[in-house]
Length: 472
Figure (tube, rainbow, N blue to C red):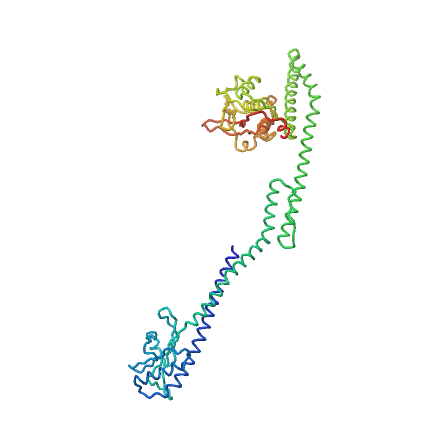
């Protein structure tokens, strides 16, 4: 558009300049030629006139001068108060007072271009002088039409103006070609950049030519190669780390099972042991149980990472599921379940139980009583809200609370009775995502302190088909 606008302004400017120059040239040529012929004709006729003249003499002078000029223009002869014209019916009002004053005062040939009733005219006046240079008082004027010259300049204007449209169209075509040539690599670069941002690490640009755009394409391809290599290396390291965690967790299960049996026996016989030995036995039993939970959590996370986790969905009553989860862990007295209407949906009962257990357990360990669980229904899903009355979550903790092994206080070591693996909120979130839902963390906004964790599950009409779960 800028290119076409510049072309249009240039064409209009060139047209205006061409019209002005051609008009000036045509009028100047016509003016000079007519003045020369008029002065020559007056010079050849005036010497034969007796002075002072009468009206008849002035009329004869005007007629002879007009007959000798091309086109027989109107000629007016004046001497003091006497005036005569070559055409008695013609209007001599085109001879203005300004021109008469110029002829009388300058005592030389003067001219003026006037428009009368829409028609252009050239009016030329000259004084008649004696041979010694003195004025005779006789003035001769001629009025010539400039219609032909105006038609010529108008024709030039029309011709030049008619060429503006082809020039603008040609400029538009050239602009499109230039824009296509220049912008096509830029558009390709934009598309390749968007594909790269979306995760297509094989996105590349064809390098054409050796200009700056080609250098830019080469730089982009080099950057994409380096990024692809770095991402590939990171993915390989992440895959190795996940395999390592899965392998270690799997390998720990066998010796951990034996340790659990021994710890159970020691724990049962702790009352018959000396105090120090009893304390050691209970410590081993507790830490062994905690290690077993950690291994179980690691195995669960490895299943999520490998994509092996699947839903075993059925229609459930969410409120009853939450109530059973609290009763199973002996939390019925410590947690208040707000009554509500029955909310049914299609979900994996075991995984909902795991989510609720992790969120409530987190509230009991890190919050403060009372802890409340509320089950609700929204237009497009089900909610389970766990609220505690603790100090709440600082802003940095809110941003990272679902990260694996995250601790709000990095300098704090876990106590023996903490019981958490650092994976509870992460496992809850992964289970919610497996349902197509999410878990959100926030602080209470009702004027009291405390954290609020909200599980959101979408409504599902029917259990998923096995093939759908395999695709997951």
